[in-house]
Image (cartoon, rainbow, N blue to C red; front, side, top):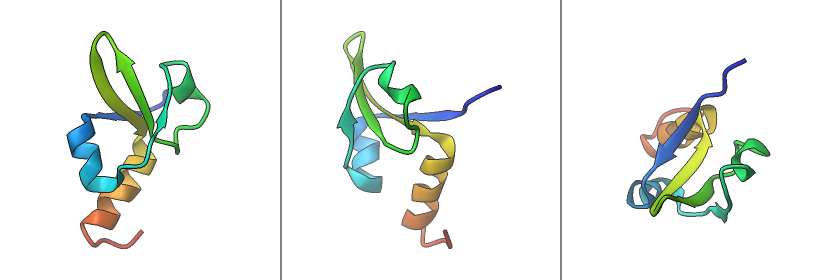
Length: 65
């Protein structure tokens, strides 16, 4: 089974919806609908499930969700 995720830089995420929870790589496996702010190897990334990311992108673009 494959799980698709989106990994975004914080600046990009703020344009979609800046709410996140702080977590680790292990945290993201619990609930991919919740955007998780992780700091890994000195990089900050926002990680969420691809489907949730797609819904948020469509909403921002004025599409039907």
